[in-house]
Amino acid sequence: MKKVALIFSFCFVVFSCNKGDRDSQSSNSDKYTDNPKLVVGIVVDQMRYDYLTRFYSKFGDGGFKRMMRDGFNCKNNHFNYVPTYTGPGHASIYTGTTPKYHGIIANDWYDKVAKKFVYCAADDSVLAVGSDSELERMSPHRLLTTTITDENRLFTQMRGKSIGISIKDRGAVLPAGHTANAAYWFRGKDEGNFISSTYYMEELPQWVVDFNASETAESYLKVWDTFYDISTYTESGTDLNNFEGGFKGKETAAFPYDLNALKDQNEGFDIVKYSPFGNSIVADFAIAAVENEQLGQDDDTDILTVSFSSTDYIGHNFGVNSKEIEDTYIRLDNDLERFFKFLDSQVGKGEYTVFLTADHGAVEVPSYLQSVKVPAGYLDFDTRRKQFRAFLEQTYGTTEIVENVSNNQVFLNKEKLEELNLNLQDVEQAFVNELITYTNIAKAYTSTTMSSNNFTTGIESLLQNGYNQKRSGDVIVVNDIAHIPYGRTGSTHGSGLNYDTHVPLLFFGKGIKQGETLQKTVIPDIAPTISALLGISYPNGATGKPLEFVLD
Image (cartoon, rainbow, N blue to C red; front, side, top):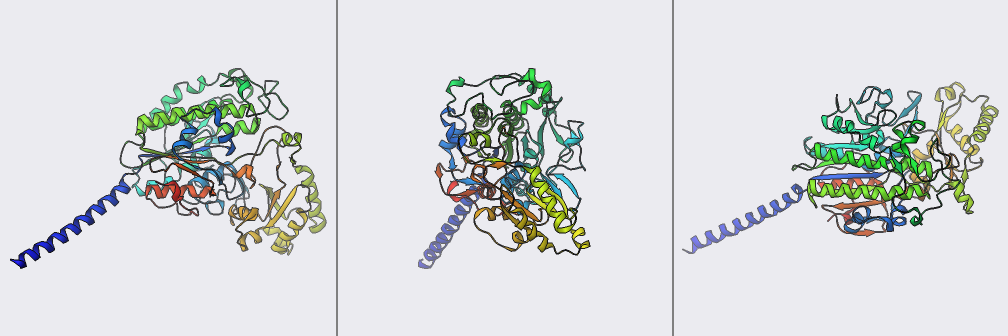
């Protein structure tokens, strides 16, 4: 009897242990099967971090404030490379690495092999879908690594959908990745439609055809005036000043703007891009995509990438300190609120996850900075070019050893160097010694320096992270702080300085803690963080790290 009791006791213990193991396995399994139904990545083009704080009092409770209040705010988030442009920015956010590895070194760059300029998303092997334009042939083929959207597609055996949406083609194509179901961007001019390319599809889905036929774009050809009384816009400069561009056909860059009356002199539907209504139509289209593609309606996580580009167009036109920028962010906040409310009802409150960041910031208009005695200025490329050509003639007897100068880089003609029996490294260093003496050039480096050193701090580290050995030039220059190659009105970007690198990073929704940090985070951390949230592989070239303090 004792023996039977002993055997029974042993079986009970084993059963209990096995049951415990199964419970543990079940709990662990649930952890990775209870992923958000939908991840939405939002990029606000040219959004400086201080727009969150400067315009905070004008925001409602359901947009930016909801993300900041209920989600996690990384207050010290930066790009960790140069150049800070739209193409590299979107690529870095979704690949979790920098141009050094993903290869998108600029919006367009000089191709050393093809001996011509190439655009980051252009692809002659595909055709536009939804437009007859030869300018809309786009794909992600120049992106060298995978994205989080790709990794989610692979993880779910292609069941999880990935769709990219933006006004700009590169803002839709690069985030959506190589395996995307679709990428859609806005074709302005005389069309006013969202289009795609044959990389993704042979014809537009019926819902896109219906959206384009709904005259939504036409509805935004209306008067753009301030959302609130302009006298309350105390967070920005005067409305009428000398630092803003404005629209053709209107004498002053001051409210209001009759977009319908101005459209014919401003490339037709393109004027919508240069107004806050460009963001509104992107929100409209994103809502239509979620509904018609049934995103977030099954057990496989879907990813929607949304890039709001009108903020960039308006920033370039009117500048960082303009009333137009303030009004644009007030209106974008409203668009975010209605988008989140739609996701609450369509996908389910607490069933989706959102992150929001920017592809770069922007410098204050240098002419404005000069007016308030802050050091700033404009680059004189004509004088610089003449000076450099004279140096080439005097030193080498020819200018042909230089193949191209663009994106603050000099590309050498290797065949000509060989013909003249010149040593590449000697010529590179001679160029650095010459260029560093020029007005408004702060630093200069050779490709040899970038390839043979490991910089961990300073602008050198940012340059190195942006330097792709196969695609970048042979000499790199860095211009003086707040000195830009631009007109005297409007803002631009591209540097490794805080006004270009410091951008928002907000996480919100399922799996995200409430909180904030001043700990430094960098753009390549975003993709690994989302990968960790979903329990999927990091993008194959990722160099960032998951932000554990963000995840619940």
